[in-house]
Amino acid sequence: MIAQGDLVFVYKDERRNYLIKVQGGQMHTDLGYVDLTQLVGKEYGQAVATNLGHRFYLLRPYLYEMVMKIKRKTQIIYPKDIGTIITRANISPGARVIECGSGSGALTTALANFVRPAGKVYSYDRNQEFSENAKKNIERYGLSEYVDFKVREVIDIFDEKEVDFVMIDIGSQWDLIDAAYGSLKGGCRLASICPTYEQLTRFVFTLEEKGFTNIESMEVLLRRILVRRGKTRPEQQMPSHTGWLVFASKIERDPSASTITQEPTRRTQEEEPTEESPHE
Image: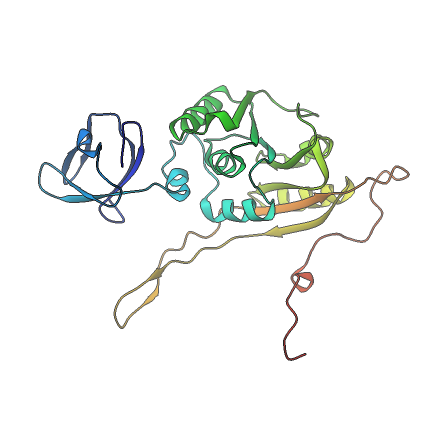
């Protein structure tokens, strides 16, 4: 049952859908307005009518809607990339995570959702305005107790040690590799999102020099399908490139060398783990 203060995804169609918090007042649309006091006491899945008689459905908000409907001051990391980050970093309840570059709090929201109830996200940003906006978004979603926001520029060290994952989302990712190394548990992962090939290349080669292995670089593409009787096809527009993701695992540094003198540690497509064929 919907109560005062609950989040509700009010849905009419792909164009008319809204993530609202039930706090009284009205929700205005081009099809009229909805008196939000009507929502209290209703069940998710039921309909509510605007003053002009148009029906909207009251759906449970999922992480996807929370990320996409977040109030933005910056570009965000999108769900298609967030899903890859969450799974490859093994974010789970109880994990301790550092995020450098809070942005608008989209990834922060996802990380907090997965580390609860016993974990913590330590989110750094040097921009006070961005950090405050991200904090408000997290408060709106009821995740504040799982996130510690810090407004400062990280130069060479994070406050936290023995964390399970570090995410770097700033322009010069390579500058924070040493800081990430000093905070990560052995064998745990670092990740970043790079907007250009030049940044990607510099970041990956610096990772190899500074005690990381199992380095993967990838782009996540998403294609929606337009389903119609007799003419189902892919949609013409595709939310494709948003950045290149990089993942790497912390290993013991060689104290006798200024750089790691092992073979390249980047995983190629041919090296991806595959299941054995049952016919072999």
